[in-house]
Image (cartoon, rainbow, N blue to C red; front, side, top):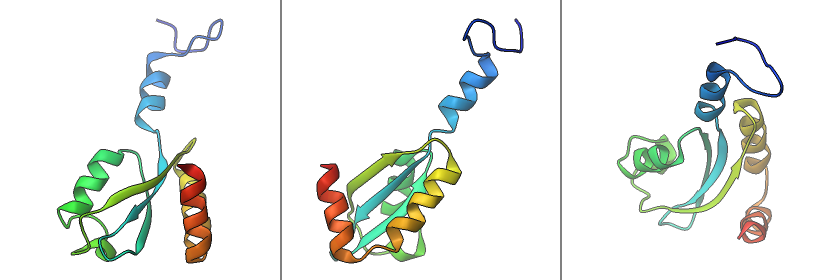
Length: 102
């Protein structure tokens, strides 16, 4: 098999990379009403980590969680940039973002 693009086809390596690197930014609502924003390339695994106290330090003891926002990104860089922008928002702005995505 060729290892270059022919007639718009992608190689198996490119296909595997595109499936593996599907990053997203997400917001969880904690049981105390606060929000946690993070990025991941496997949302189910990451939520499980938060729920079993193996996720971020901030979320320890604050479960159960509700996934209230998720936005797919092209790559980790874009996900990190969106995470940074969301973390700078006020509470009202975050809630507006969450409700506009529903």
